[in-house]
Length: 218
Image 1: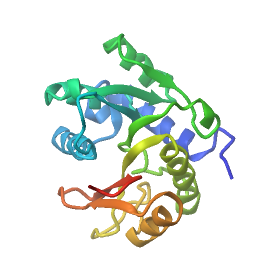
Image 2: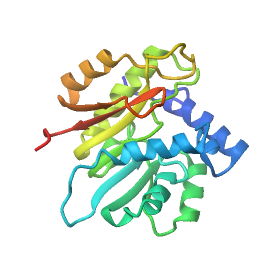
Image 3: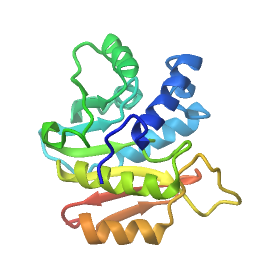
């Protein structure tokens, strides 16, 4: 069941995100994050997926990179030399902005559900904010999309992936956000991707992040 039309979940979400960019420009609001401090926290959590590496930079794909704020974060933290960064998005508006800021950085324009064979392999693939909102999409349709997407990207991650979703452990849930039961997610990951999973629910936001690795920690 692969999305094929402009009404597919990812097209709905991209359209919403592009409305943020149009309204707010190149900042945290322009990618849908309410405040800068929380956005920085998320970048740090995504970076923590990296395990101890050797002398060669690790290859990271920033899936749904937007205007490449994570790339800027890597430089701000002084770790850009540890990383061979590539960004990917299906929004031409975001990609045009990212390329204008970082003309020497590779950015891919690719819908991986339509062309999975065109996605190169990386050591790590991070999906920050890609699965946190569902806009007007139903939970069931979004869950099908999430499983398809994670299966596709994990196949191209030689070490692992990191992604965040909204938690169910809140006082109330927003209809436009993707609140995923932890047991549902873990059952899927164990059955279809890997049982080597770390759940991060410790960083103070109303979401959690999963690290999914091919191999156990040594």
